[in-house]
Length: 542
Image 1 (cartoon, rainbow, N blue to C red):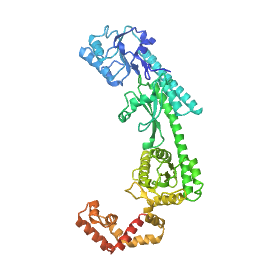
Image 2: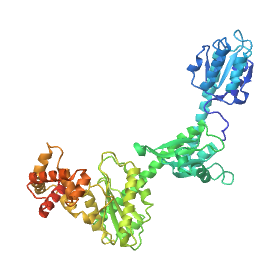
Image 3: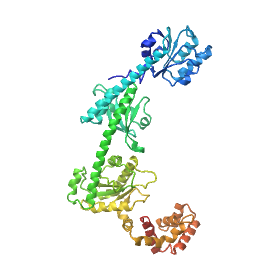
Image 4: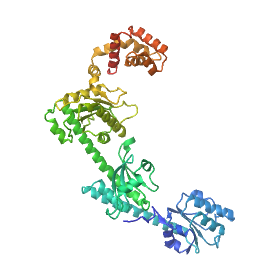
């Protein structure tokens, strides 16, 4: 299937001169004989001086010379403009206008590298145009047939149980060069080369040489064919992968791009199916972890079931982790895939599940010792957030994901700890500023969240903060943010002023105004406790 010498979606100037229409005019190549392999994209006949402005490049121009001008300067400008436009060749029919081509035309064509052909007999330009256009269309059709043949072979191999490596192998054989499947970020997924391993260069070595560095992935070699494998989503998930056909030996042709585009459609289906299977598996693991947390699986049966799901921790403690996402807008298949890939680099056993209905991602992490809890929690939280960003689930305006880490322990302690972490993750939604939260330190948040529908809680918040909320509804600047910052810094005025970018006197005035409005002393511990609880409870009220 070697076709590297064929033109890209057209015919060559040499082939056009061999067709009966132009051959009957006894064509003579005056200049540019070494460039007759140029591709003729289209044929145009014209006799106007400014015809170059009507062309797009790649045309074979037929003319009797009426538009070339009578003065050498006009003739040189005419030929130079055609060359700059990038036409394939200029064909001039000798006759009433020119019995011999002027030296100004010949010399300019030669210096511009433009193939110049003169016809010694009259030909019907309309017949020549029709003949060459038919040849071009037939050439396009032949390219389509070749690309369709590759598509058929790829489809057959997939229906026969083959996968991505076999599809890439067919494409590499057809292109007579290596073919790569990369992530949208340029990381290598699969590689295939043409022919047997002992007769062709190792495609992995080729990829390392051409695409191994970050710079070459951002700017691939000239002539490289890049074809997106669609992901069916928007934003970051709109491109699932990319097919790469580098210019090894010779640049790939149009037919190779056509075949790659057809193969990309098949690969999109294969990858989508793999993602769906991956999401289903993640949902199954999420169901297991939820059943375990809610007591539907006995702790004694859990290790065997977890082993079936691929989780094989050592003898150390197990660490429950739960991530909560903002509701709506999350595509779970790419998210499950991205999270799994990011967590695979953490270096500890991880059982990852997803619970799309609750917008929750539960995990169990295998530790070697209790002392690993914090450093492993740091790495797991970073991997979870990286996976969310990579899957495009961190939408603008949405609440950032909250990661809550439970108490580490054995299988008997996992259900209660996992349930506590899951409930706390829900209660902690809206909290910001930390990569992860310790479930043991958010029990007040959890208690207030559980009381969120109790009218007594709403009444408590109104009694504690009502006058300040009424003031803020009409006054500027509002005072609630000042109170929240002051209490978050445990009453340290210098730190509060620094965070709010206020001078001390302005802060003192605001705090005095808050005390007057609420009728309370901000230095009194009981008052501070009441206000702190009210501010926390306010976040959970409907």
